[in-house]
Amino acid sequence: MATACAPSSPNATSTRELPALVMPDNLLKFTDISGYENYKIVATHYRNDKNELRYILANNLAFKALKQHHFPLPEGSKVVKIGWKTRKMPRFDVALEATGIQRIEYMIKDTQRFSKNPGGWGYARFVKQNGKYRAWDQGTQACIQCHKIAGKENDYLFSRFQKLF
Figure (tube, rainbow, N blue to C red):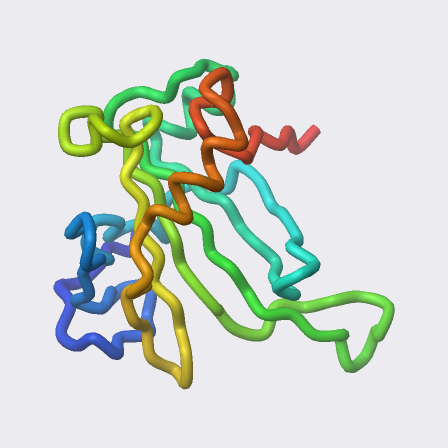
């Protein structure tokens, strides 16, 4: 199993090496999701306005709860969203393919640290531009406001577990 390595630069690009970046308003680190490449996919989405294919992954705690439709998710749950740019496939132009990561975002359930946020969730967004990641500098209030739409009954999550069969 692959494991994440200690970050060595803010420009790391491998899933084995996460950049040493920190969200300015809540101090969540990119490295807080080290090992995310071993999380399980719970859902996929396509966002038209951003031309973005999104994979939603969850750590074991969150995966088990989502699979069983158990809300709220337990303390320590982590849900990661990877947003990929898309384009028409060159050899099959009625289909889209992912071409590169645009962003990696995550939510972490920590009701003590994020007691003022709905559901006790902390949010982080790391945007990739010109081959380099950067922490989103506009804060997490937009994340909090948007996730309120999903509602308390859904533990402020938009995604649902998508069964394979």
